Length: 169
Image (cartoon, rainbow, N blue to C red; front, top):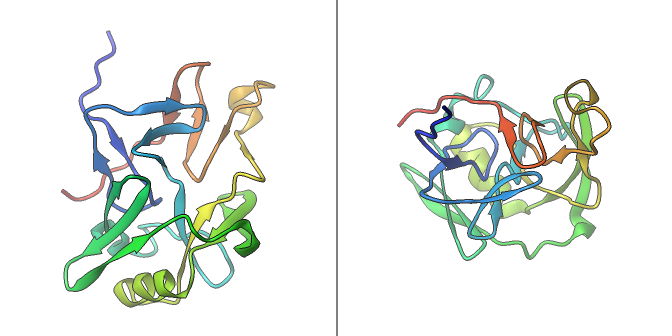
């Protein structure tokens, strides 16, 4: 028997998640309050995603959502609010693992906040739905399954399995 012991959504790939009592299941993964799982990610100067293995301080960034607005917070720095006001005109090629997709740059203020906290020249990008990220055909065949920035592969028509990872409490 399958038992769900915890339900979390991770709005920013590699940052702390948000514990949930309920979530909406979309074809791309979980969603809560208008924000999708791994909808944002942090990239370096080459527009390549960065991980906690490379930048462990990412695990200290807390995420919260309210009415579709993302808030980032961490000890010793004022919170940062990220809205979806930036348009696809700010979209650029980004790389997550071996996938080349599009990400909408969330601007200099968000980039400065993340760079200051992590201690590296980084930027925050939001997934650009104009270029879907197809899942690996070795796992999903010709189903057409797609995801955002998650390490996930579609399991069935109703469930998306997302790679499990630990973050500090």
